[in-house]
Image (cartoon, rainbow, N blue to C red; front, side):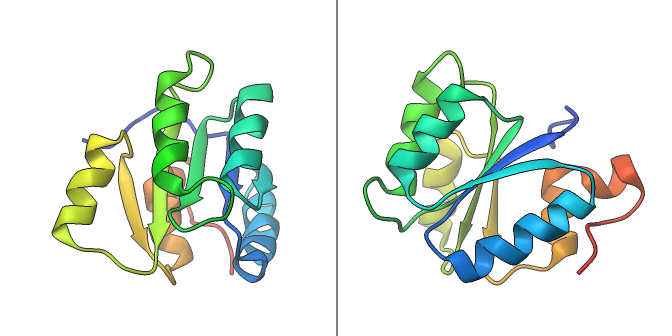
Length: 133
């Protein structure tokens, strides 16, 4: 069941700057407060300092992978309620099951369309349209 809480702030955690930078711009234009971290450890620090409504994270990153980041975000009372959306270049049934078991609510296959992200964040329904490309 999709989470109906309004997403106003988002943290993107991914080491692929070429994916993150344009995404930051599009999401800011859509009215979100968006931050970025380029490895899992930095993402955890940033989320603990200023907990976002949602975290969009990659699985394969330096310092701390996305699995460990998911676990730590769920264990910390400051970040426990953040919506977790995993983005990855590969998806299998086992990976999807594990992601849900780790506390993620959604998986997005890279490269994803803006509309898929908007749906995952609940933006299409709340704001009437997805972030612009």
